[in-house]
Length: 310
Ligand code: FAD
Image (cartoon, rainbow, N blue to C red; front, side, top):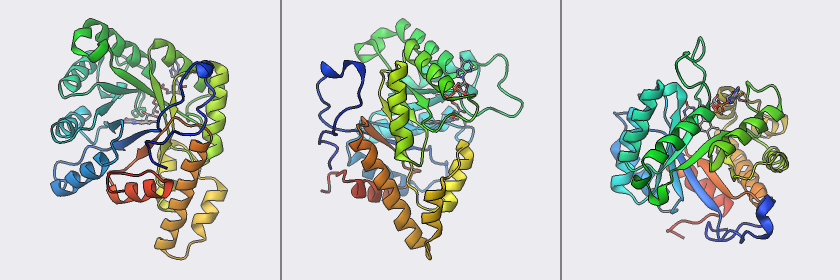
């Protein structure tokens, strides 16, 4: 399957009868701002490999580790200068006060960003400072307000605004209904699409997408796919995201007798998961690359997504 080929039936959104079928599957990558002492040749190769897939955008995370948005903006500047990829910046309420966030948004726009992923960020110890925006919905509203004051700067007067969503539920949410209410609210305030947290079962995503639609969510929900290269890594990522690795996945990976066999089993599980959700109607794939071009390339080849080399 090439990203240029159409996916099977699109998710059953309300306007499906009138909407033309998508020409191809959306494809995007998530990358992490490299440390200042990172090997420049390695980063150049990462960008070269990712660009060869002609992704729709490349999402750059932000965290305390990357100096909040300092590292994000610097990496985005590099991507804009050296590649044709369209950068999307992660922006979290935890990055600063409302005024600081406004400064960051303007800096990111200057760096070439035309898309933002509006997040709350992980709760700092002691909770969110009182004078910060408390939730991602407030950030979506702030971005749209800024945009309306600077429409002339943006093509068609719009920034692409995405938000996070959680097929296996957000760890702090009381129940699934809360997750849908929050997503509906973000949609109402101007979110264009949502990217999911990692998940381990295709069924979790497909059920979530179906239930979201029934709840009134119309924006595309793009599945975030994490290459399952080892059980140790999965457990660590699961822990960070408040998720438990399912018994089925755990048993299959634990049965491996060598790291190579474990990698093989995990990558096949990941490819199978991606193929199942595409067959089930997902609009696209968002790959968590962890800045590893070889694993990303291997995964996409197993899924059947080609780049310029093929
Ligand atoms: P929110 O939407 O604010 O939700 C957090 C909790 O509050 C949920 O339980 C929700 O139900 C509840 N809630 C939401 N709105 C309201 C409201 N108005 N009133 C009351 N309760 C509410 N973190 C980073 O720091 N940097 C990153 O680069 C980053 N990238 C990410 C990329 C993806 C694709 C995903 C899925 C997550 C990413 N995260 C990142 C992690 C994210 O910041 C955490 O998952 C965080 O705990 C929640 O973020 P959110 O935007 O979903 O928050």
